[in-house]
Length: 433
Image 1 (tube, rainbow, N blue to C red):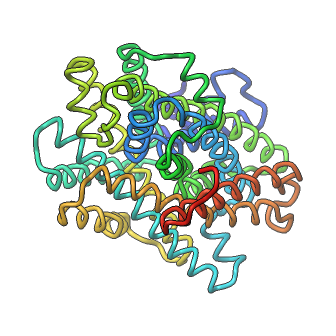
Image 2: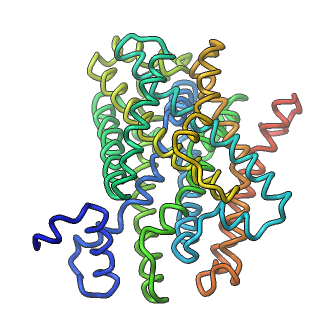
Image 3: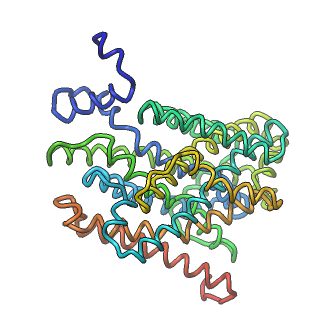
């Protein structure tokens, strides 16, 4: 490496390296790592504190029986994150910007409103997760914990001034901490692996409340803000100069999505498996993060409880950073106005502070936030399917028939689950459930 290259920042070196690979001048296997980043950042949305809450409840109350929901949600997530990334790569625009340009004004305002509610629900989950972790670790009240989480989040976000690469590496490191924590947890807890395999591949709903937990898992896994965000992370990262380079970028992106979301899916499954192995047999009533932490110490030892807290803190901080990035992108895309990160941070923080100030149970708030996200989810999903299927937007990269059908099917599944949950909420009996 020359002196001039050594003086370049991480982002500049990464961008130059990507150009070399796309031009065919660098064919080393390690050069493929230069393309890693957008899907890694987006994947933290699939391991946020909302996942902790819903997965603990699912594992403790229903054992391994809802693992199939995690698997199904992850497969749907892979498809939609890949489509979102492709949209940004091909058009150099993000989903919110393209929605504003191609849909009627009334539809755009409706999408923006729903998306803002989803962003606030997302921030509620992420802030509460970080605050709960700090509260349990340092024995401080939730409100100061949320303030500390906000300060740390803002500090990490300032890394954006140095380019995209430092922030990608920070988020990647925090994801690694979450994943490693659950590897350790699975080594500590006793797991009935045959039952876990059955729960993963045999769909079942064991009890009247299982459906609402399943929809909560879906809302915690496939995230509206992640669908918006991924298109923005890829839109300016590397500009393809021709069709061949654009095709290479889409191919590399698909591989990264597959790997990053496979890791996220395995972490989610590990959360359910850990909760099932630790609580289902003797403590099925465990449904709160705080209770889970306090129960882990006598059941599995203080090491298991500490590892659990480390993963929760890493998840809360990293997902809060990503949530702010997504919220800023959504607001700017729909309004066409640049929003300072500080203002964006205050807008989405407000509901979280209000919930704590009103004394609402933190884990209940996490669960409800995931259900809200599930109802908001069809909005970006439908918009993404429409835009990525249009040749006037995507050109030769418009969805093929089977891809469009799979995306439509995924959207219909979520709409159907939401409809069933609404009917159950209003006391309408549904045969077979």
